[in-house]
Amino acid sequence: MTTIGDWKTTRSGVHAEVALQETAYKNADYIILPDGTKADIPHLDAGIVVHARPEGGQVVPARIDDSLFEIFLALRQIWEWDRETSKSVLGNGVAIESIVEETGRRGGRR
Image 1 (tube, rainbow, N blue to C red):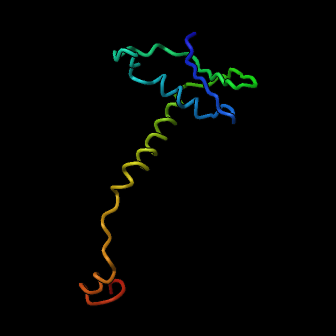
Image 2 (cartoon, rainbow, N blue to C red):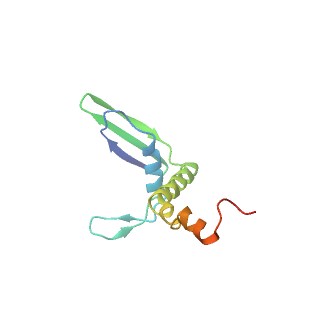
Image 3 (cartoon, helix red, strand yellow):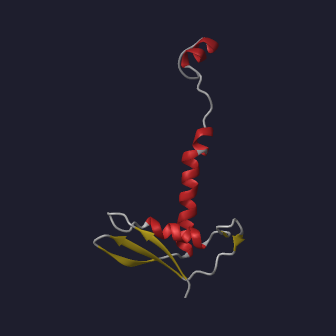
């Protein structure tokens, strides 16, 4: 069994998001090696998190299945919406006073 692992040292314990992180690694196109070359991602069967703290630690299993990758992709779209897309969906506003001056009336259509 091939397992991907990650070290975490947070005081607050292991966060669920690490499973999404490892799932993203599992589904990556390639690994970039220290010399800059690319290598294939091996088939990964499981994920673990090593939570290391001065007072002790633990090894925590992490799911890395396809359903979590779907969630990762959905969250990635939300991130893109927040960072990029949302900034381009609305045009420049037109002052209401300008509309009144152009139409010569207030309010909606009659």
